[in-house]
Amino acid sequence: MAKPKKIELEPPDHKRCQAEKPNGATFMTLGGVPGLVRCANVPVVILTERNPNQKDGAIGCMSLCLDCLAVFHKQMNMKHYTEKRIR
Ligand SMILES: [Zn+2]
Image: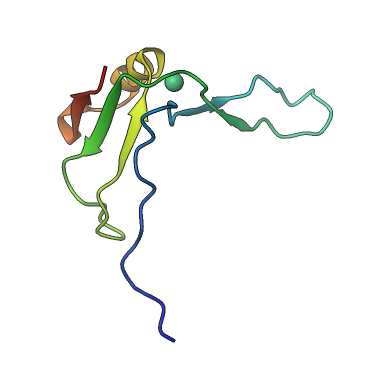
């Protein structure tokens, strides 16, 4: 059986923010490398990429809470994304 080529993207989660942020661990922490933990807040917007990913042609989208949206606004160029309020 051939594997389907179409990439299934994770649908945006309307109940929980999909941002991942540093878990606060440092290099001094036993167990080593700092990791990322999924944000547990309730999302307020769904962000969708305006253009398909150049590698796989998929259009990504994710839900973000207000806090993560503020970080996203600072770090990313919003002209590449559309923002849809869900709350
Ligand atoms: Zn969040």
